[in-house]
Amino acid sequence: MECKDSSIISHSSNKFPSDLKYQSGFGNHFSSEAIVGALPQGQNSPLVCPFGLYAEQISGTSFTSPRKLNQRSWLYRIKPSVTHEPFRPRLPRHEKLVSEFDQSNSSTTPTQLRWKPVEIPETPTDFVDGLYTICGAGSSYLRHGFAIHMYTANKSMENCAFCNADGDFLIVPQKGRLWITTECGKLQVCPGEIVILPQGFRFAVDLPDGASRGYVAEIFGAHFQLPDLGPIGANGLAAPRHFLVPVAWYEDGSRPGYTIVQKYGGELFTAKQDFSPFNVVAWHGNYVPYKYDLSKFCPYNTVLIDHSDPSINTVLTAPTDKPGVALLDFVIFPPRWLVAEHTFRPPYYHRNCMSEFMGLIYGGYEAKADGFHPGGASLHSCMTPHGPDTKTYEATIALGNEAGPHKIADTMAFMFESCLIPRVCPWALESPFMDHDYYQCWIGLKSHFSGLSMKENINFQNGKPVER
Ligand SMILES: O=C(O)Cc1cc(O)ccc1O
Ligand SMILES: [Fe+2]
Image (cartoon, helix red, strand yellow):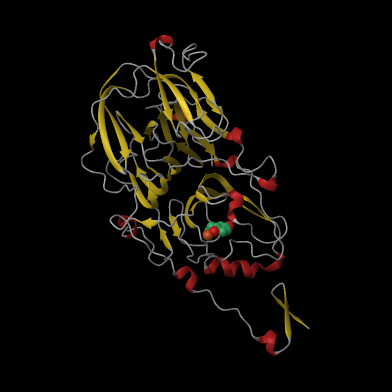
């Protein structure tokens, strides 16, 4: 899927040039200056910074986190971010954001859930107003948990910036590009790419295509990292150099009535200031927003038999303290060759102690012939059985053992997988887009069992009856 050329958008093309520059790498200590000489040399906080800038640190981990986990950046800005009027609750209240999941705001259900794509609103709606929580677990206050949100929106944020004090956002746009201004600079993100906006960074989202829809995973108390590669070796899956980080960009001057919208404990607060928060002339550090193009992923999979566990397709993982147990994995199902012999190639039927939320960016999904559409979603919670629908099962069996190499093309599905058990928000359960007939996709699965093998001394090899 190609990004459309941003230069064709006239109204804001000068805000987002088509040749936007990035720095590359994952977990690097980056540095960038929009004016040469704006970064202090030799120390972080000189008495007077170059060009009279203010020095400000943003910490993404505790000061005392071990060095290999420690994340922080130094921002050199025209005015510090503290220069604003007091935070006040934003009115009218945003009713559909949750950051601490309990009986008062969400419920639990083991049933398989699926949603059709939610329509784009007709009334003017920006990214913040269009964001709503589907499900989640744990608590932003206790710094352990996650929330899964979706957004449908149609207009750019105006004279305001969003700041999420609760956790990191991993945004998966499905429809419409996101042009995101951050304190570190600008990011252009297309469907087929993802963007990570870490806790605390201020950002504004422009929607150059209008109608926009996407998925958001928010993690509390952890950050994403690249998965270990184990026996795969030193290369493969998502390569560090394909992660892109902005270069410094700033705006100066007066912006009367500018509003910072802060999400704090799942509630929104606003504070007024008379300048843009995107006033960082230079910065350095390893706590940064970044994006990644999913088409760059180098998938590994079976080359002989059986269907690999989906962890083989992990792009990013947010760990818990237990080795190998993720607070949230971001896993993709990209185009790839299927070559396995005498193997049921689609995802196997299974129950998982982890919980699986899935979305589809484009194309179809290999386990569902019908009903799972781009922009739709599904949730299979802890130990809830799921797997291919009846049509997929029957079509796979009809193809039989002779199926040769086959390429799954033009598709990008993904999964947010968590060890925590999600509670589901009432507006998601009561949504007009809920697919109440989802269970029907498995009801048609017939018994193919034959007792013949016992009774009439027939043996089975590779599923086919053979004489003994
Ligand atoms: O349930 C799903 O469709 C996701 C999934 C895909 C796969 O290839 C193996 C296991 C799994 O949970
Ligand atoms: Fe699954």
